[in-house]
Length: 253
Ligand SMILES: [Zn+2]
Image (cartoon, rainbow, N blue to C red; front, side, top):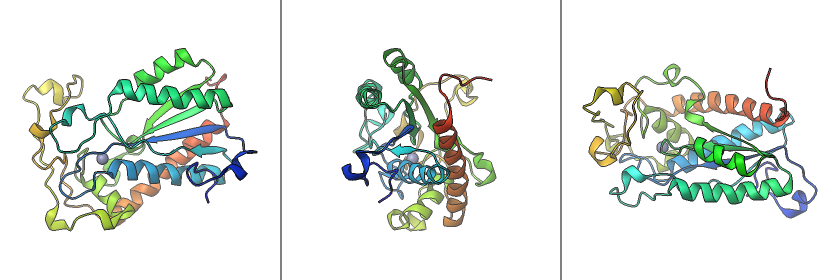
């Protein structure tokens, strides 16, 4: 039993426990090219949050990782079979209930630990901040924590070299053999302003990718996945430690 994983711990331990920070991992249930499981984002957030929390815990941080929420915003993928969409307004309602419990019980810091590109918690957190002035709520996308170019050759953002490498390391049994891997070829928007990154529109997933992947996974390997996992969890572990020790009333230099 890991005392920093809520799903594993028990009332005998928790009735006298105190925590400084809760971490809420948030994934998605969606197609990940031909070769990765629908739960890829759930597995990644689950295991990256747990290892990061272990690193922080061993340095003395009192952190508790909540169970991973399995559904994300998939509004651009409604025609992809069994991609399960959870609307942003539902996410707000879920967060509101979780934050309500933490606020009442005196855990006044929350990290929403995001694993899925369609989830965007920033505006939800702004609104929750109005409702719960005692709470310090923040979010991170773990896949932006370190520079992926130092670990991977091909760019991408979905079932790509990075994600395939990670899954080869974390859950190799759930990755199909290499001859099944999609090429992750993406059709870009004809209006170049969108690809420059300063204008945004939701991508209609079934029109931009044949296999649902974005980014070629061909150079993926378990070794790359492990190296990247170690770098990300080290960085997130330090972040969790900092959050635990921070005085949220006195955050600025
Ligand atoms: Zn993913």
